[in-house]
Length: 237
Image 1 (cartoon, one colour):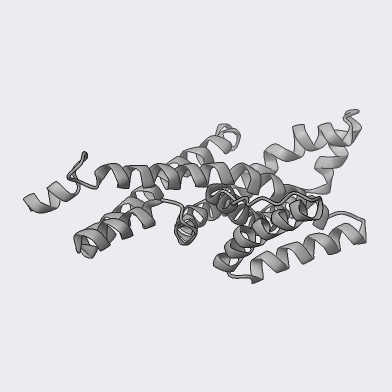
Image 2 (cartoon, rainbow, N blue to C red):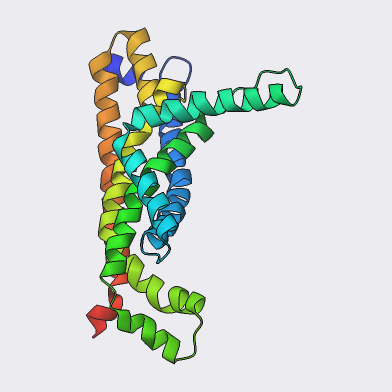
């Protein structure tokens, strides 16, 4: 027991600092990915319900592609493919230099692409749950389509899509573990390094399990509070 506490302690003799840094990277990556994934997913949902066939086709191809590819493969394509594309572009304009893509940025882009493809379906289902009369009511009050969307439709859309988006957030939180394969020091990579050096895999991987469960529990509590807040008008009625 004392040996385990020593290994988990902070400072030069323990791995607490590295694990804490990994937790920070994991949470930061998930939080940084979320707004991009939500925004892109929202516009994809708008494209899918558009009357323009080309927009619907492009959005459907996008979601089919990133929902069909394994998340790890998407991460590799972004991390290595983006790096190759930048190097070729620089070589084309006569600049011979080596640029390495930041692993945090690559992980954020890859996870946002995957997250947006799934969140677009959540938003699309929510759009279908809003009666056409809500749009017509906004127009009859003299609101422009943009204001109708922002003031009338969007609040209802968020409330309807929130349960599905909450589940996607929990999935995103777990999928951040994939970035360890491209060298980003998250919870998994910190735990792996500690387990490999100390020869205590059960201790550190068990700790990683507890950390992910704690993050999921905290997220679930926060999502429940947000969902209750979003339904405050229904409770009052």
